[in-house]
Image 1 (cartoon, rainbow, N blue to C red):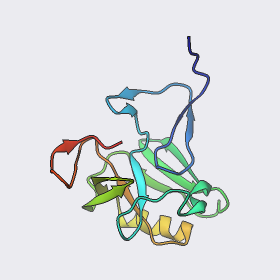
Image 2: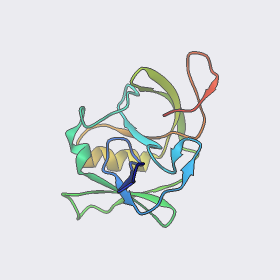
Image 3: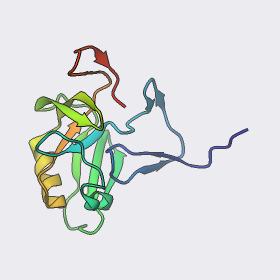
Length: 142
């Protein structure tokens, strides 16, 4: 028999996670877990392997928003992102060997994150269902 001693979600891939007392599950796992990611100018998703400073960005879900703040720069106001978004554009993003359709969240989020990280990045949101580029069939994105 297994015992769960801790629950964490990571709303933005490679950013700090959030410890939870309980979690809502969906058909794709825990609610809000890995729904956002940072991508570069080539639409390649980014990890701490690419930009170590991602570890300095903390996440929180409060008041129906995703909030991101920089651990070492508390003077910078936190970034607030709606939990549901239509985005300002759609794009195909490369996640390891997969290509998925994602929504670019907002130019404000892109600017805030680029400034905080000192690198040109964009915030992408992965809706529940995405279209894979190779066959345009609807696929869940992990």
